[in-house]
Length: 128
Image 1 (tube, one colour):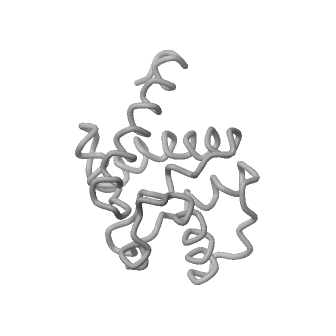
Image 2: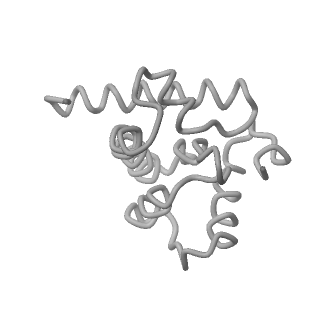
Image 3: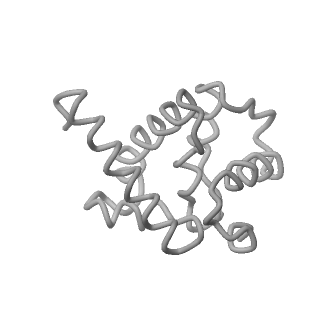
């Protein structure tokens, strides 16, 4: 359990650098499980989401506030090849994008735009 906001901010920055390093090396988004494994966090199910979700949401807020590329856009669900619903909720909460619906094609279009802000991601690989 995190006991201070300083610890939380440090963990967020560690996760940010892990995401950037992994995605840069792969030239593609990486999965939640790959990130969790690298960070020594639970790699499956509800525990993984409970652990990573707040951190990834905080990164969306920070990146939106600072008008930077959205780091959390580089993390995807292995099954769908896209970020989860929480990602799109965080985007909307941050005021970065208005997510018009829960339709996959709308979310994919928004996500593709966000990936284009990361020049090291090869778009053909990002399409899944």
